[in-house]
Length: 289
Image 1 (cartoon, rainbow, N blue to C red):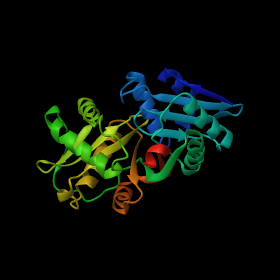
Image 2: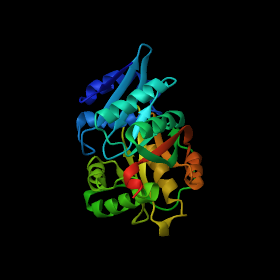
Image 3: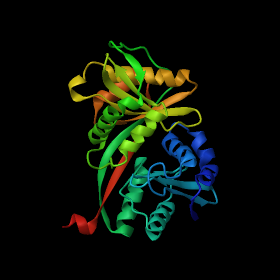
Image 4: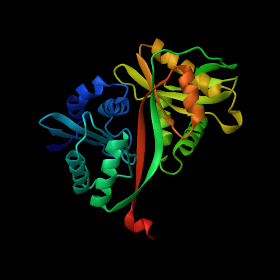
């Protein structure tokens, strides 16, 4: 069993591509981030972690992390405890700080136990999410207004809403320091959109395009404007725009604790793909203070 870290995202993708493409919607987050890192290795800030564990039977584990964000772990086959332990020990030996880990439940729970033992951390369960996939937009009632692409003049509002989106979704568990640059980049790429009526009332973005798909994220409506169907409208119309632009599918993540958003997206045509679990880590010494 072999652990490998890749400094070159191209080499990482060459190894992982067959797995990513076999289940592209499921692995779209990892694939989309990798494709972005190929264009700009430090797009998210520091040096990314790109790692695999291989055995005689092929890829056992894939790990990706763009500090200061959480570690993503995927097991293409039935995971082995030996592979999980090798990943945890290798990350610790190589000095990687892991603030949190996300992935399918069995893999994440196994990593949690090993990381706490090896790194001396404590942990607690974070957000539980559901990954959805859409290939056809279903007809829904659309409120007054229209879809408009954000312009650089919208930067201040977009940054403010972007930070509110992160706080609503993740509380204090997700860093927002880099959100200003991420939002600016998204606008410059032409991927941030508003529902306007006639002023902006809701926001969403196309993020992390893959070979055949794209993700919908940054879905945010200010509290005083919610309940009017604006989020449904911006997601439905933006999803249709993505499909009409040539993508075969769209994906998005929802918070499982929010039944409203899960219901809304299914009415638009989003079908569940997998449930994703997050575990957050805290240094044992600092948590005892």
